[in-house]
Amino acid sequence: MLPRVAHTIFSTITDNASSSDNEFTYNVGMSVIEIYLERIVDLLDNSPAFIKKNSDSMLKIREDASGGVYLEGVVEQSVANAKDLLTCLETAAKKRSTGGHAMNARSSRSHLVAIVTVTQKKVSTR
Image 1: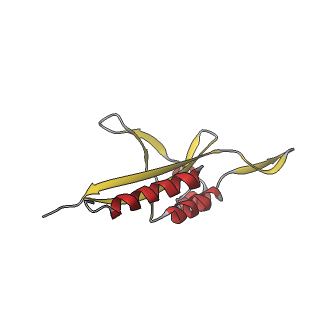
Image 2: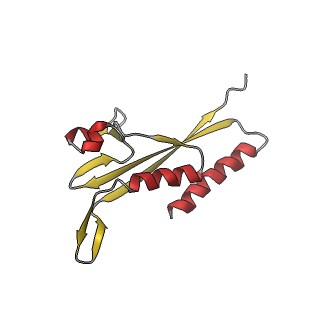
Image 3: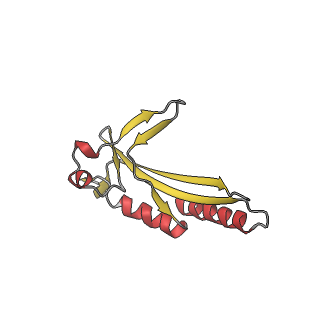
């Protein structure tokens, strides 16, 4: 499903950018987290704390002044096209927690959440 969504996002941006009255620029970012054993871990984080998977690498859920919820300190990687987005996801997925059981020697033991953020900004026409 994500490949189709990625291609749709970028084809829509391309279609909008090619219109004659285009007044906007677009930026696309991606964050990927894992929820495992009641911990939230940033799978795009390459810091020493993450590599050791110690308590310093766990993300905290916060609420902003307007009541919105966000993950404090999550890495958002800029992606330029659908291929970059899918490569980013693939890289993150390799860091997931896994473990074996009777039916599968390398089973995922966590939930992966991919967060894609599209920002549209009006271009100044001065």
